[in-house]
Amino acid sequence: MSETKLSEYIDAGAAKLPADLVITGGTLINVNTGEYYKADVAIYDQRIVAVEKDITDYIGPNTRKVDATGKYLAPGLIDCHIHVECSKLSMTRFAQAVLPHGTTSIVTGLDEYISVIGLDGLKEIFNEIAQLPFNVIWGLPYKTPYTIPKSTISYDVTAKDHAQVQTDPRCFGVWETVRESVETKDPDTMKVLELAHQNHQPIFGCSPMARGKALNQYLMSGVSVDHESYSHEEFLEKARKGVHTVIRESAVTKFLNENIKSITENVAGVARHTSFCSDDVNATSILSVGHIDHMVRLAIQAGVSPMTAIQMATINAAEAYHVDDRLGSIAPGKRADILLVDHPGTFNVETVISQGQLVFDDGQEQFAFTVPARSSELTATVHRDPLSANDFQYHTDHADGTALVETINSIGPFVRKRRDVKLPVEDGIIKPDVDQDVALVSVVERYGINGNISHGFISSWSFKKGAIATTAAPDDNNMVVAGVNYDDMALAANKLIEQGGGQIVVVDGQVVANLPLPIAGICSDLPVEELAQQEKALQEGAREIGSKLPDPIFYLSFLPITAIPDLAITDGGNVDYTQLKYFNPVLD
Image (cartoon, rainbow, N blue to C red; front, side):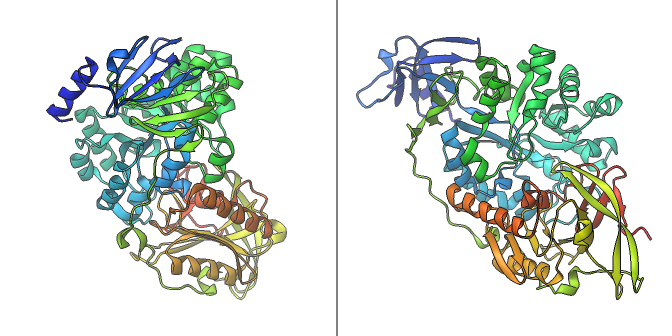
């Protein structure tokens, strides 16, 4: 902030400069003290300058007025951990989608973008963010790729990047440091952590199912916040050991009802150091249930008091990420992110002010969301020659007979276990088997770096025909192709190569659903309603090929994440999470 701007704010706080906007007649939800009382709010530029019973002195001839009579004033909501790119919405479209639900801030690493366009490419994304009434709290990923063993991506974040970026004012911490890198004392990760301590940067964690000694070991790294708890017992242990625990809930990853038990059934005080995140969310779920506002309502329904639930979505989150000097409450000096809601107990968002701008009022959009021009560096990111059916066949030395293979059996989106199956072998090719519910999967390196293509087997997908594919696939965003028909797999892959990325379903040589994702091969500028329609078409296409999973494309895109127990597949091969190494899926 410049000295001139600071001087203006000080004068505005003293009512020497008139407010740009005032909110009158409402009841303040004071998350700092846990009180409800009548108060008016004055805003100058992007900051709150007064919260008083009488703000007459702050009103000038050009001051805009918002009547909040009968409404409650809540701080803007904060999503404490989100891979915003996994929504497949561009930053502009994502902000446009979640702001009506009261989300005015997100904490993110933009790591999916980095894997494709690198840190230099982020300049274009940051320029886009700067045009939005939306707060992005960015942490530089502790490294990329996250995969162990290392997969292929366009750009590797290293300690050298952290030495430069951690002191950048846009950087608010170290993003998603996974437990495995701490456990193995990865040399580069150790340097990053040391830099974070020197620079007083918070370290954001990721440690699913870490308990006891494993958790103690992990916390010695300096991690202060974690969003991965599979049970309320795990959640409570982390909270008791000083971790700011984040409850995760999205369309597919539903952990709130389980994790909230640590508050409602165990220790109510845990709530003071708990907040909310969606991690990954899609257009369909935003339109159907909302965003962080939905989590506030779910927490209230589970037995948490409305004030506590709202604190979890606001001031708790801001404190956890060391941004409570600017976000998280309605108070002088804070950024003017204010919601008008019907009542704390029902928490329906009716009006949204973000960064001092009236963005939505009674459901009507008040801000012109304009999609920026996109450079070729951002849209031409798939570099792969066309593939053939033969490229997706699993060849073996055995001519005919059967082969015992280890399949990646999907128990859920975040649990994958081993299942051994005997598959037919014909002419040296191991075949998929729909009767035994085994399909093929391949990960295709798509950056033009080494031409890798890996092969494996998946089960519990119920494929009867066809293929599906995606280039949006964290943590490396290579192209993942699965199916039971080689020709359909090749057609799906080649269509995505041709259009520069996307998600697709192919059946019997016909494209039955196709969502182009031209922005880095992972995002689109489609409005949220149109993207939701495309998601529905993909779901219907996946049903046509027989899949019974809740969201087959989502499951497919997560197959390369090696931090999900127990198995994964990257462009380097099949990965055993428990051993942190590749394995051969053919057992005999």
